[in-house]
Image 1 (cartoon, rainbow over the protein chains, first blue to last red):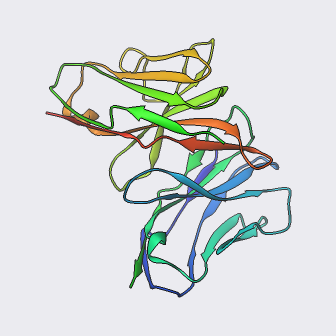
Image 2 (image 1 turned 90 degrees about the vertical axis):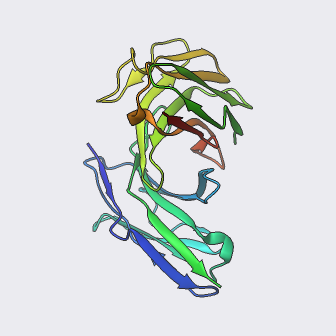
Length: 115
Length: 116
């Protein structure tokens, strides 16, 4: 069984600043995939970024980037130049196989961007 | 990618009754998933629905309470049966589809259920 842990229930940051959300995980598989999902107050869950475990290069998507430390089983999300629209719940998730495999979610971090 | 819609978006139901939630995907997908989420909490997987076979339920969820249908590759329903106030929650549907070079899971907007 795999687990995903998010140790920061809530965070807040000033607009335009950089914020890092933490995530650790545990799995016995060697090949797996990690995700960060965003759920704004409107509650539609949106995929922010994806990282394949076999790739050493950290994924980036515009202002969003990850710090993937495979040996430490750590997968943090960095949001640069934060915007008011980044206010949301952020969930870290793990799956051991693409296609026909469920996601294991962390407990989430509620991020508030302060104007 | 996939766009997912759910109906109803919210409902208030009396205990002892049943509610069927519909999930429609704009493209054909193999796997669909049903989650439950308490406001401000994480997602709990109820079951996985594969077209043409019985749904696979997670520990703590049973077919008699949460029957699922998956009649084709774009549609699924979840029924919450014999409801009690403990069933008050947000129910989310998701589907796995090919995104940018890999499969990704897309989510519907959710159904907010209140049982009185």
